[in-house]
Structure formats: C-alpha cells, structure tokens
Length: 101
Image (cartoon, rainbow, N blue to C red; front, side):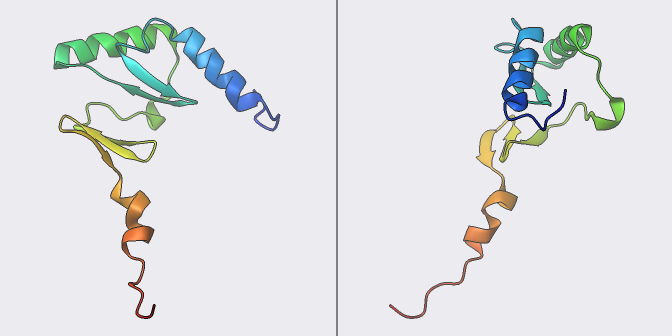
C-alpha cells in the first residue's frame, strides 16, 4: 500500500483491525503496523502469539518476543502497569527553571 495517499494510514489501520478482528480485545493491541501481543500467563501469551501468526505473516527481524516491558506509543507497558516513557518527557523534565518573573 502506498502511504503517500492522504487516507492510506486509516485504510491500513482498518485492514489490520479487520484481519485481527476478534483478537484485538483479548490478545493484541494494534496501531498501524505496531502490534503488541499480551497474555495473563505465559501459556496464554503463547496461545495468543499462535492466533496472531495464523492471520499475519511477520518479519522475524522486526519482532521482539517475551519482553517483560515494552515501549509502545510513548508508554512503557509492563506487569506493573502503564507508565509514561521517560524519553518522551525528558525535554520537559530538563527544561531550565525560570530565574526571573
């Protein structure tokens, strides 16, 4: 798909949602070509990976499996919950304190 067209990203997003329909609420989250697969247990995670693999062809070079924490859409997602990625807030945190009023 040519991404030069103005509506190509939304078309691609709809396509990904259609291909993964039924899995997006239980097994994975999709944002364009980024997919995060989840599971409450290791066995459930493996099963969810299998379900996604049955529907998509993935490039192994672009995949990272079995991570305890991942950076996704500006957030760090882990078993502890969702936190803001410090890299995304670094510029604001490092902003110099005003010295005059």
